[in-house]
Length: 447
Image (cartoon, rainbow, N blue to C red; front, top):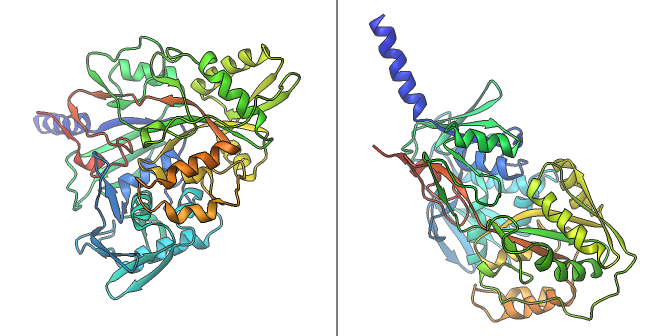
């Protein structure tokens, strides 16, 4: 009996050190080639390694590649010798090359990753992996943070600090021998789709980490602290029916969505691009159109309460000008499908921008991950090569180009908020908690 009791206590102690988290939707099978979405990105960041990472200060740091160099405007990466897949096999340049080329060749691969690798030339040069494109190396380097490497011919196998097992409808991740030396024994994710249920789990201490609903005056329980990661998240509206709806939304957003609308968790956007990325506040050019009598359908993800609340407020404001704005909830997967096909009048979703100005190009370039409006401009191609660094004056010209006839408009700027067990030491960065390097591998429980 004594032995059994001791064993139970050891198991309980280990379980108590597991980080308890939740997913709001099923991420689907772990797949480093086809997997897409926020939940899938978290699993890939925990179970895989990208060539480079981004630390809590927003700097590019070594990850799978121990070093890199720029050779004739191309990036050459030299991989670590101590990186291993789950089966113990060493990660090689061939694995990295296969992953990148598989994404490029597969029409069903992650749209985000395909956009990053568009027109990127990949090859092995000696012991190095070389990537070349027309984009500035600094931009490509930052974008590669989002592409973990899979084992050759095994798209579900990564080399990351945690190993994934599905148990009883939950996602269990266990620490493994890894060069980042994870400090926590593991994480467990449960599927909790309802915001109120997430809040109750946080308040009762059943979740170590969670995002509370954006409600006025909401405070974490004494067991948790409220962290505010400096992420660039916006509620974006896209238009496939011209400029007039965006002109209306631009005028209505401040009045319909005041500063305290979400209790300080979100504020009305002021310009066309995120200010946190260094962009000046700009307005859409042109005269105000006569909108009276217009009827617009705007799609959004079903169950996304903050988006629904914002759209209902905008609908009431639109009525005052004789405009019928019709919010239509659709399944999140169907919404993404309709966005990519351009099958909508207006659509709305929350987008998270990477912490560098080039990320806004996804709204503009052909096949950009967020160019759902089909936006094009004859002067864009000549302007892109001049965006050679984050401080180039060409960014002002780009914004002026977009202001002439944008394909989308930000409605709300979100302030990141996550409740974390005060015993757990984490390091949020500009890409959130999980995509930062070392991310969860660097967390630890305070003694």
